[in-house]
Image (cartoon, rainbow, N blue to C red):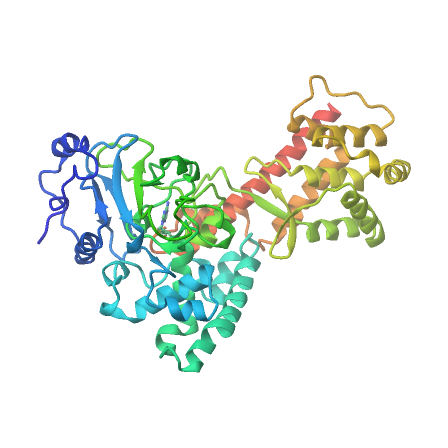
Length: 512
Ligand SMILES: C[S@@+](CC[C@H](N)C(=O)[O-])C[C@H]1O[C@@H](n2cnc3c(N)ncnc32)[C@H](O)[C@@H]1O
């Protein structure tokens, strides 16, 4: 039985780690699981240098806890803890399926998913077997939940419709791109390894573990780098290039979960990346001190809980990047029922002529409400326009051209000047949040409360308190889907409560 942390030379990567490592090395190293031992052997044979100052912990695939990385000795900023040759990464370029993928014209995540399915199908014959045996069959992202689970756990949340659409689109991708490869018979692919279920499973792994390596390799599975768990805003490691330290500008949110993150490069060397030569390794460097015994975290980016659950299958309580969205369609519904369809259309059309809009994603347009309950400026402007008296509305329609100001504040000030008889600039008003204050009339505040109520009604009949109580009784590992969907649901509902507070504070404040 091989004890942890005794094979590799801890100083090979970082000479000054030697004394710290030797001082803090645990007297009886914990037993390492069979799959981790196989992975360590595989890393050595593929030139991956992993400092013995890092310990890989295996909570076991059955327990659902997975693998995490811990510091054996104190790690300090600047310590180099791992070097990973790009040739050890599984990408379209390095995979045995490269010819097939390229001749089928597949690229991006789809190409990588096929590369991963192909290497998995080869079993022990795959050069990545020692790495692949460490991966779960699939990541527990909502994409691989059953439709019934999606409906039960996600209804009303930001993810419900998105995941249903994902399932449809992904199935279409498989039908259009993978099934023809099986049916052609040219590549000897079988449904047991390349079926729709295997495709969804591989996609869940690519979504939760792939990184963009460089322009030559594109996305890839990066062994060892993908064993670090995520902590929002408190990561300990980053990646950087061996040959181009100046490329550290690209550091940061290293994980590229899907195409939306195409621009997040793990590493780039503009001189070499397009040819695939030179700059052949990735380095992992400590960016925040870690005390011996503590977990070493990476960051997958600054994301709200919907994005975390969607891409990685987990959420974080009190996530400051959390948001809730209010669809423009919901606002139109509220406006049409309060006024009329025609009225709603006219007011929204003027708002658009002033160059305002919601955010867009997958054919929906929505407004963001931030973690502290603050509504997006564009929403406040729209509500302000909706409540304009007819005269002011007409006046504004004739003066749309006045809205070519150099910045947002000037435009808002113009908007208020045109539509209010008396306009006095708020004292010292400069910052964007002050601009918002000009827009939140009592009417706007009550509309915000109505919108919060309407959005809340999508969650069905259970109250926030009931959701919170259920969450308390839930085990994050055993009831993983329920637990993380409840965190998502309660976080969203708490933001809606903060939106109501935001509106109440302003409307009563004005009356007082
Ligand atoms: C890149 S892998 C990290 C290593 C992973 N724990 C393993 O067992 O191989 C990403 C996956 O780890 C898990 N994970 C990462 N950070 C987490 C966190 N803060 N809380 C819960 N699960 C996390 C999620 O399942 C996620 O999809």
